[in-house]
Amino acid sequence: MASPTITFAGIGSGIDTNSIVTGLVQANSGTLNSIQNEASTKQAAVTELSSLSTLLSTLKTAADAVGTTQGASSYTASVSGTGATATADGTAVAGNFSVDVLALAQEQRTYSNTFSSSSDALAQSGTLQIGVGTATPASISVSSTDSLQNIADKINASGIRASASVFYDGTAYRLQVRGLDTGAANAINFSETGTTLGLGTATNTVQQAQDSKVKIDGFTVTRPTNQVTGVIQGVTLQLTQPTTTPLTVSVAADSSSLGAKLQTVVSAYNAVVKQVHTSAGYGTTAGDNSVLQGDSTLRQLSSNMSDSLLTVVSGGGKFSSLSDIGLTLNEDGTMALDQTKLATAMAADPASVANVLAGSPGTKGVMDVVSGLVSNFTDFGSGLLTMETQSLTDQVSTLNDDATTEQNRLNAYSDQLKAQFTAMDTIVSGYKADANYLSRLYGGTTTSN
Image (cartoon, rainbow, N blue to C red; front, side, top):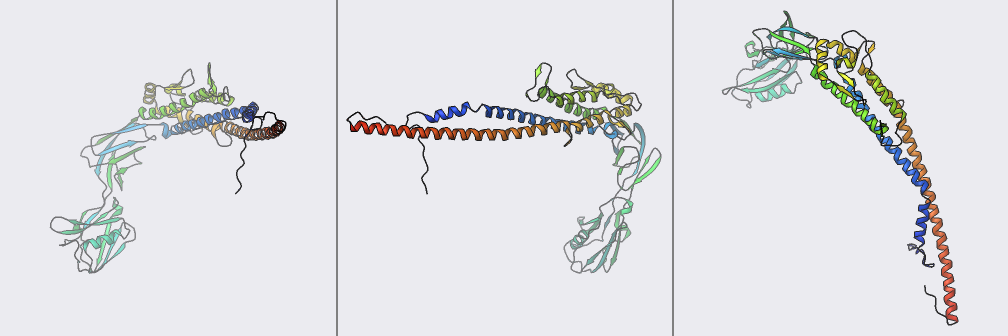
């Protein structure tokens, strides 16, 4: 293995040539420093634009949440008394409804005859057929060594919409078969061949499968479950118990729920505005990045955002703009929400409020305009902000390549200087050796190394 080469610059001349080389290289590094500073500034701009794109995406999500009639409409449902609960979605209509709960939906429960043990063999053999509704019946093979628990396990493994377990009343054991689904259509039928479990005995079915039955404004409605939908528009009733007197279900506009959604829009919108101000500058305050100060794309974004909020929406009703329902622009371009004004507007004409936000078929609402604006700036490949970000990213890549080239030039320059000084040291060392030889030859003083 060859020994490494060790260079002692300046040994021959006594001059600190390493410091000279470093100084000369640094003196020639102005171009590299300039390229690196420009790349760093533009990379910071890319980072800021990427952050702005993320904020715009958040704004689009918030705007889309109230950009449909259902999302922009908000209602609450309440029930007087017990027997049912109610919830409402954005398609509901304000009003009061009379509700009588006549019966709850329930699943079938059937028990076998009694036995003295759950684990002893029953000494019965044959076939037990169990059918749920119109589904193909399951055929359960029972052997003489099977216990109640064995039969329950076989039923549970059959795949039918029923479950089996062993029930103990403190004296005797029974096999319980319980339907997994409520509703009359899910009744369970039993047929025994060779066994005497008693599941087919009518009196052993202690709970029949039945539909729920409710009377709404005098009209009788049945459902296979205790959840009633599609009767009162936009309202879901959850039945809990039969009633003796009618309940009143009240549906009303809910400004608090819509207000929470709109506050999310306001927060997201203001975050975008503030980021634009920080990057491009606002008023007498300069932007924090020289590349983005006064940037035309950011100025256009800011202007378009303000214009979008001033959109006037046709379609009738009491309101046609955001300011009518409590959303206004501040002097600095941020947005504010007056919850009291929104509540007043919701109470007066909730449909018109929804129209301002979400529009109607063939007409865009303000939130549609805001969402479309965001897409114009952030869509992949075509968004104005996306294209500017990509342009800056490409410039950073080019600058980094230029920096590499310049660094290679400086490295070559450094190597050249070191070679020249090494050659100089060699010559000076030779001169000193000759001088020492002559001095010794003629009796002079030896030149110090």
